[in-house]
Length: 320
Image (cartoon, rainbow, N blue to C red; front, side, top):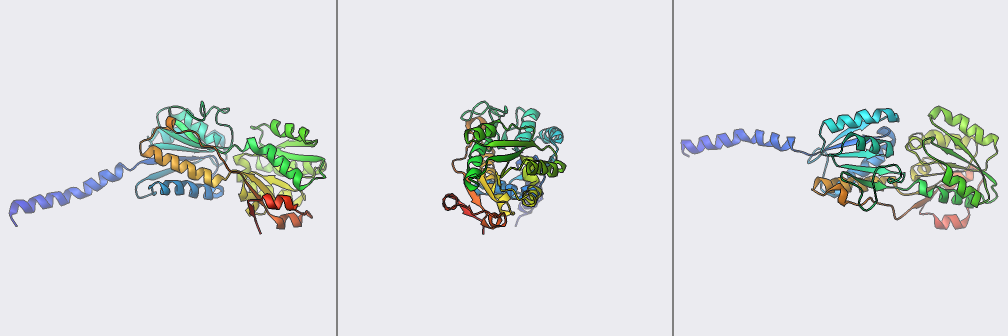
């Protein structure tokens, strides 16, 4: 081999690490902003990663994820969102309305994908479902819109009930459920719960008012506190209906709603499409087309309830 060829080969070899380093530096970065913390949302994060993987993106291989957690403190989210924006992440993801709104206020240029249990138009995330906006799109789970249906299902389970309870997040409204209760001829005793420490007093109030069932409102806080909520429902012997199946798999009685895990998977798919060059404004907000009814007969038996055959037949999943 000639001396000049050897020098050329050595020079190329010396450049390889530099090329690899440049390629690594160009790896897209997703800024993941969570409203709560990792522990109660592990399945959701797995769903998000699954959506990315289905589209060819694997964390650590061809995409990086920077996680920031609000730890259930909404006041922290704005600072965390600004931090991600300052790091110039490629795409920002907001898990839940508080995180999504914080992300939107932190940047008008970085693409944002969200998941939301609230109507994203009403809370100001997007201008419409079909043309969401210049840099924001996502997945709407419509939890609050199906709370009235949850009340109907609770009535099916406890047909003799005349007074039912509800615990709800004070940043949300219980108006839709109150309207549904009047339509069903039920008296509704609604109690707002802002902190985990208030749960005991809330369930004591429900017991004092002799409610015959309780609807647990839709909010990220309650998902985070679900084990304690399930325990208080059991201690007060109250049939309860929840928003997601995670409550039921952990001992709750019944849930009805869109799959949160699948919503996060859909969000991962949207993030991947943006990483491939699509614009958020061209991606309509995803809306659920299927809502799952999940029932735990063992919990029903512990409460002295017999689940009607009609409900069992309607159930998408029965937790044995």
